[in-house]
Length: 364
Image (cartoon, rainbow, N blue to C red):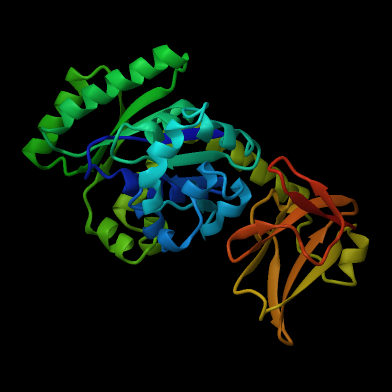
């Protein structure tokens, strides 16, 4: 599981835009992504159509009110789950200061998710307080978006010194990368900034440049990622290139897993009651009363814990039917009801999981 902290104490550099659209670009390529909104403004949540003020999120997790699985909102865009942020995080600095492991609290929670996600993206607040320190201690990579402004260089140098101080104090070695964001290389100021970034700072600079585009602001106004709002826009392609540059090895592994899963499936989906019986796949049907929930999804060992992957959905006679075809055996699974992961209340057969809850068991 690769953890990327998107950090810059300077506002207006596009941290949240980068966090949302990098996450979405990864999710579009079948990676399993968790986006964590660590900013009290909650803009990463808002940018994906989630009202963070109305949701339990990161603050409730850090103060022990909720468990990790209770604050994850599933499927905010393809392949991406979200832990929302809200104004309550403004009190997190005081909360964390009283904890004995105040700089490792986030890392300890994320360690329980190993194997469930391919990548975790941390949208950090515009300040180098304890929230950002928690993100830096948990991260494998630190990504610093930089806008074409002459004021940006001083802030980056101070941030680099802080990261070096933390690296020495805690014996951590995250890779640090600059990202040229909102750039129009046709302008002189942008070209000059690129030259200064490459020549004056001893930090790796991404080959990918994120161009300035009105599509970014339009997508945010619609509460959607660029992948959903403007999939063919040039700036959307920039984020796809960024995903490949930063996480090419992760995406290659995901592609290999997807290809292996496809090759393991029959050439065509078997029809229930005929080919299904001869192909060793069995049809399993879950039924839910549609009055009980707005949205129901299923994730488990049979679909690599990706909600509703390879699951057909039908609405019949006042109920929602979830149909999947699996081989004989036992499978752990969970329901995602209105974005909340939980045990199947209609199935008493369950087993404890690593997050302190229970996974339901399906026997085929």
